[in-house]
Amino acid sequence: MGLSSILRFKYTQLMELSPILPCPASKFDEDETLSVCVNSELSSSTSLAAPEPRPGFKAIFNFDESVILNPLEVFQNAIELMSVLSKVAWNAHIRRSLSMTDERFATECALFNLPAWEGLDNDIAVVGLYQTGVAIAERGSFYKLHVGLFVDGVTRGAIKFYPKEPALATDINLQIGPSHPNTTVMANSGRIVDPKDSRATIAYHFDGVKIKAKDIFTSFLNALAIAAEHSNSDLNAQIPVAASAAGEVILSTWVQGDTENSKMTWARLKRGLLIVWECLVINGGSDKRPRFEGFEFELEYDGVKIGAGRLLRFDAAANSTHVTAVAK
Image (cartoon, rainbow, N blue to C red; front, side, top):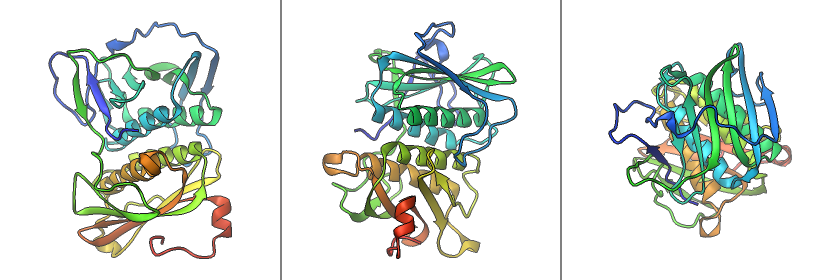
């Protein structure tokens, strides 16, 4: 599966670039009728420790079970989109719609601000995407999906997962995900160099404990949603617990080294989480296939250890009597 993600703009001319790269909402008609087989809503937070929704928030899900999507592509699109949102200020207004896919995918997801002339608050987008990912993973509902995002009964935005249409000749494609990092087939232990910053490296070690794909996905989605609440420049970035939706897996990170002079910013942690997801989960197996098992990782900058983390299944944690040199 590919690492690069693509924002596709339907404008013939680019408007001013903001932290959220724009894509007009005209691709869908808001009155579009879906063949709804499942219609449900979430009005409160789930079991994850992700950010609490603002009062009055509600997400309503409409699944079209006549259109089946690729599960791994759904997971990847959702994580890539959450990674983009996590880098934007928590109270920022998203004034353009955003679509996410990979050039080799048959699946696309999109975030829309409704009505289009009003900005969608980033906290609504993050919580909405988080709840959407949990609903998809826990139900195993990999179908065409429309999610309405509401506050106090007023439509504020929408999230959609759908089959990708062929790219138009006038489209402008921008690569936003990391390029292929400086690594080949992922061994049980090794080191990854950030292709965008060679001063940043990640050491890793797989523990061999198998984990369900949906649990890894919801753990990472949770972690990025938690990270989204924090400014990129803030120091001592760490996520003590990001649990899977079922509560059986945790993703935990911590700061290493001198906390008073920490180089562990939230920007570096957000970037590190995306690289770990793409390199160890999506491309960690043989022939760059997915690898669904636990691991430990350690973040270094300029050769100095600044942070570490672990993806762990709870029963494996209970049975563990030691941690490796990569772990805390």
